[in-house]
Length: 250
Ligand code: SAH
Image (cartoon, rainbow, N blue to C red; front, side):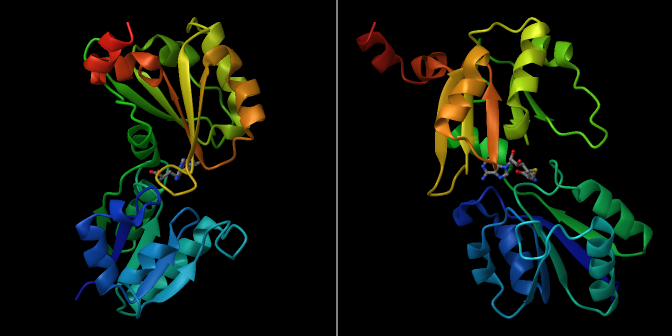
C-alpha cells in the first residue's frame, strides 16, 4: 500500500463542528500531528493514536515547518496512517496547499478533508450572514499577516463590494483601519471582532471601522480572532433576517 497522509481540518473549536470524514480519518489514524488552534477535545476520536503537538502553543515552541514535513514523511514511509490535524480548514491560511504539494512530490498520497474555517463559524455564531441579498454579494477571506510584510490591496478590498473576513488581524487593527479608510471605505462601516469563535469562551465586540482599534483595546481583544467588516456586521442583517422584530421596533 502506498504511504498516505490525511490533511484534516478540525474546524474552529467546537468539537461538534468536526466533519464525519474527519472523524473517520481520526479513527484510522496511528499518528496524529496536531496544530495550535485545534481543540484537543477532538482527540477522543483517536484514543489509541500517538499524538504529536507541533504548534506554537502546543508544547513545542513553534516547530519549524520543514521539521513537521519531514516528520510526516517519516511516519508515512514507515507505513503508519498519519493525520495532520489543523484548525479550521487545512487550506485556508493553514499551509495545507504547500504541505499537500510537498508530500505528493515525495511520492506520498495525500487526502484533504475540509474543516469549517474560523471566519465562517465566527460569523454564523454571531448571527451574521456573510452574504445577504441586496446587502453583500460576496465574501473575501484575507489575512492581515503576509510573509514578506507586503501591503494589502486596500483599494480592491475597500471597493470590492464584498464582506471582508480578516484572519490574523488582531495585532494589525490600526493598519487595517487606516488602509481601508484611505481606500475610501466608509468610517461607519460595521465591524464585528470575534474571539474564540464557536468555543464556550467566544466573545464578540461590535464596532465601526473608524473606532475598531479603540473598541478592541477597551474590550481587550485577543488572538485568535477574526474580523468581519461590512454592512452585514451591523443591524441591517438582523433586520433582514427577522423582519417581524424589525417592523415592531420601527
Ligand atoms: N486554517 C484556519 C486558520 C489558521 S490562521 C481556519 O481555517 O480557520 C490562524 C487565524 O485563524 C487566527 O489568527 C485567527 O484569525 C483565526 N482563527 C482560528 N481559530 C479561530 C477561532 N476559534 N476564533 C476566531 N478566530 C480564529
